[in-house]
Length: 118
Image (cartoon, rainbow, N blue to C red; front, top):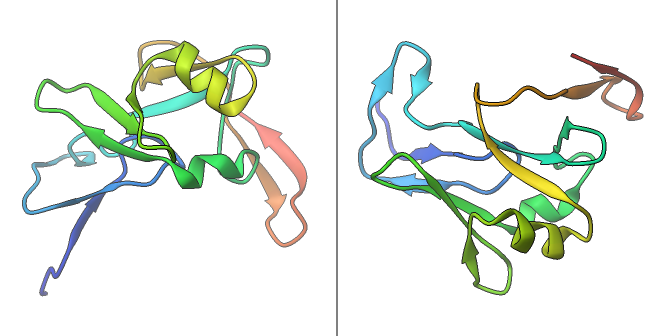
C-alpha cells in the first residue's frame, strides 16, 4: 500500500487538513472527527447535509489537542458566539465524549427522507 496524502477532518462535516504525518490510534487518526458543531436549540449535531455552510469552513487540530476553524472570510475561531453569528443561529462546538447530544442521518440518502436520530 502507498499512502500519497493524509487528510484529517477534526470537526464533523467541516473541511479538513492535509498532513505530513499523523498518529494512528486504535480508533483511527488522532483528532479525526473529534469535535462537532451542535445546534443549541435542538442539541443535534450538525452535518453538511443539514447545514451546507459547514463545507466552506476548514478545521485544524492544534498541538495542544484543541481545534481552530477557519471561516470563509479567513477568520480563525473556536468561539461559539462567532460560529453562531456565522451560521445565523445558536451553536456550540463540542469535543467528542464531553457532552451528549443527538446525531441524525436519513435512511434514504437519495431523497433525504426518513431521518433517524441516535
